[in-house]
Amino acid sequence: MKQKILKTAKLALGLIAALALSSCLQNETTITLNKDGSGTIVEETMLGAQMMAMMTQFAQPGQPDPVEEMFKEEKAKAKTAKLGEGVEYVKTEMISKDGVKGARVHYKFADINKVKVSPGDAVGGDEAEAEAGKKDEPVKFAYADGKLRIIVPPADFDEMTPGGDEEDGGAQAAQMKQMLADMRVTVKLVVADGIAETNASHVDGNTLTLFDVQVGKMLAQEDEIDKIAETAKTDKAAAMTAFGKLDGIKIETREDVTVTLK
Image (cartoon, rainbow, N blue to C red; front, side, top):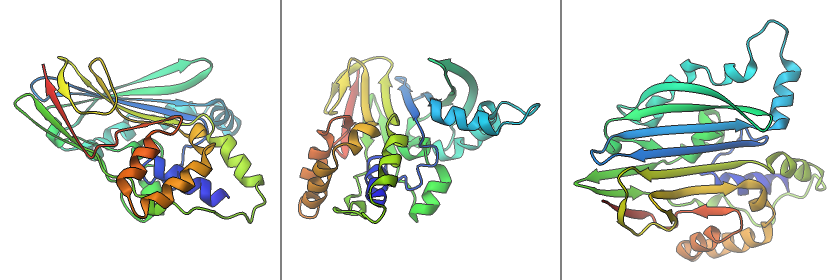
């Protein structure tokens, strides 16, 4: 059962095998595009109460704040290479909401054509990619003359195995579900000057939601996910559409999204 849950979460988060920061983590990545092709990337990550408790428990008197260490400037600067050529680190803001802590990291770019964003970067990083044995394929962009094309990588339904492993008797599976209950990963694109036309699946004003997964809700729908995995063996397009209709999951089901700017 635990293996099945991990594979389900891995599919939803773009092959994040390890879920290294899984305990009550919420991450929202917002890309803002200007008319000239430049823009910003803001990554907001909040650590839940369970993770905060663990980090505080092992902290030693006189040592740096473990949350601030987690979001050190050096780490944020190192990530610019994964976000694409020409992406620059701007600043990191430490934030606190409802008794939990996190950070808001700001980047800027001159050309969205060189930007690459992967939901997996939020919670797995290089360690997750190593465990999965493959790299997480990112969302890419092609922009010219006020027209944006968003290339969304298809979900890899081969990672799904209906039935799963029941050898742990359900105890570890229940614990895993509890740990992942509040985990959420979101990727949004904001068009600063407004949208004239788009075929995107999820649009609210000038904001496109490319990826929004509430893992706890997703894991409560294992039977439906089993059926979708079976469907994917013969019809991946239908499986992707069905997956996007599950409660707590909002994903872009089109692999080629177009946006015309105002």
